[in-house]
Amino acid sequence: MKVNPVREGIQDQSPALIVKPEREAEPPLWLHWMKFNAVSLIGVGVQLLVLQLLVSGFSRLDLRLATFLAVEVAILHNFAWHEIWTWADRTRNSSGASRLRRLMRFHLSAGLVSIIGNVIITDALVRGAMLSVITANAIAIALCYVANFCLSHWFAFRRPS
Image (cartoon, rainbow, N blue to C red; front, side, top):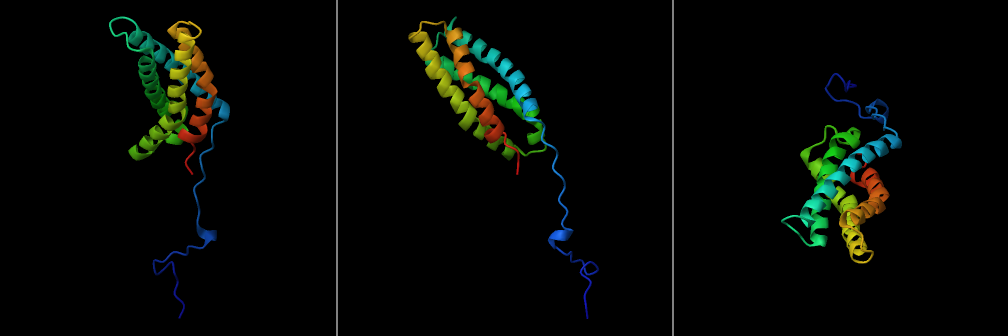
């Protein structure tokens, strides 16, 4: 006697019967690039403002420590905006654990490039070339910029598989 698998509550799992939902189309690279530029421009303002506040006025922190703290504030600012806008197509409907993993990847890639690059380059340009702190830091940001986009797009906010 033959048993009908559908009638008995057993579904056939053959590949021909498994239907996977289609993936949402990936926005073009230029759109992520443009959003990254907008977020980064605001992040540059945040970083330079925090740096200026930390090296002048009442705080007068060491240049390297002030640069590190200013970059960290900008990293967290940029991550939040990349999460909800730049790469929203990749982050929507994700869990808190996924968000935390992305934050860790962002810090270990673009964040590390920004922190190390900004601290070393800013310090070298202020002490060696006698540039102002803000000019030196703006140059450091520009030098780290493309690497940060690449690391963010293809590693930190990579498309879920």
